[in-house]
Every structure is written in structure tokens, then in C-alpha cells.
Image (cartoon, rainbow, N blue to C red):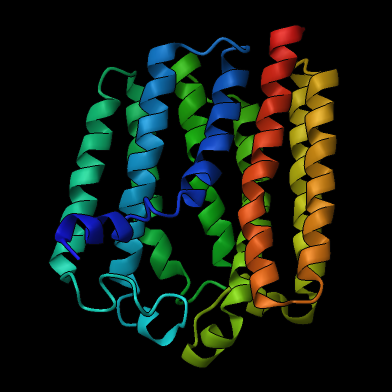
Length: 284
């Protein structure tokens, strides 16, 4: 296997679910901030930036977990963990991607650039939170949702209250879907002492996931309603809620592959939320 294909796997371009889980909340923020008419250049910058920063985050995550992943069945064969690339290569890849991402936002305003620094710090420190934080998925929600305040800053040159509430909603959503993901690795994580929400919630894990879905959708509903979104938007919320209930049927048995399927299905939940927002602005 050549180096390029190993780098491709390092930054998970073969597994784009992480990209879309960052992209949906970012797109929702850009649509609401611009009242349904986002600038094409800003849209392109944020889309490419999301791909680049998620990829950089994967490289940093694998560097941080290089001695842990070898004990987890699902991650033992990752390029860095398996020794097919060196630690310095992962750091170099992360650095290059971060620099290119920052270059992308140079045309944007100062507030957006300042927030990008905070976003980089959060993304870079996330892998270490699982060492001591009982629910690292909440911190992941901040990292995966930082495109929300950045999007509002790029469009409006300010970060209004609705942006921060949407970030809170994203934290709840991330706790929900990443707990489903953590349920897949729970046995391995218990052996090696990693902290995850699936372990912290214990036998209440399924209930916690559903409560987090409920909180996320309720906050998004209120935010959208206060922004003047109506029928199409509410329809998107209803579809997303139905999907969350479907996830319950998958995770209630706590079977590894079913929990992983629920996690992956969050792509469609995010798509439903975005479609509701976009269609409401398009037809209102």
C-alpha cells in the first residue's frame, strides 16, 4: 500500500460520515445567518474548510491514540497504530491541512479568523479529553459544532444568541450519536480505561441517547421558530424525530453493529434538519 493511500485512510476520506456530521450544522448556520441566501464563496470556503479540519482532526486523534488504538478491535489496523506510517507523518499531515484551512478563511472578516483559532484549539485538544472527562462526547459536540458561530461571524460579523443555542443543540446531538458510536467499543474501552459517555451512562445509555436527541431537536425547533421558520422547517424536525425513534429500535439491544448503524444513520437525520431549513427559506 503506497503512502498516499495510507494518508487517505489516516484522514478517513474513506469514511466520510465524520465530514457530513460537521457539515450539516455548519450549513444550517449559514442558511439561517443569511436568511436562506448564503454567499457562494463563503459556502465553498466553509465546505472545503470542514473537510480539511475534520481530516486534520483525524490525524491528531490517531497520533494521540496511537498506543491505545492497538487494543481496540475496530482501530488496531489504522495506518499509524499498525506502524505503516510514523508519528511525525501524522503530525505533518495535520499541520499542512490546518494551514491550508486557515489560508481558505483569509478573505473573511477578523472575527471569523479569531474563532478559527479557538476551533483549532478545541479540535486539537479533544483526543486528550477522553483520558479524564466522563463525557468527552460533549466536548466533541463543541468541536463538531464550531462551524456554527464561525458561520454566523462570516455572514453577519457577529455571533448572535441563536448561534450559541444552536451550538448547544449540536452538543446534545453529538452526545447522542457519539454515545451510539461508543457503545460499539464499550468492552474494549473498559479494558483500557478510556472514558466515554457509553461507560458513564452505564445501564441508562439508551435513555440518555434518546433524551439528548430530544433536547437537541427541541432547541433547534425553538431557534428556528424564533427566526421565522415554519412549515417546511417543522416538517424537517418531525422527520428527524422519527429517525431518532428508529435509532432507538437499533440501540435498545446494545448490539455492536446495530449501534454502529444507528451512528451512521445520523447523516440522514442531519440531512433532514438541513432540508427543512433550506426548503422553508426557498418556499416562504
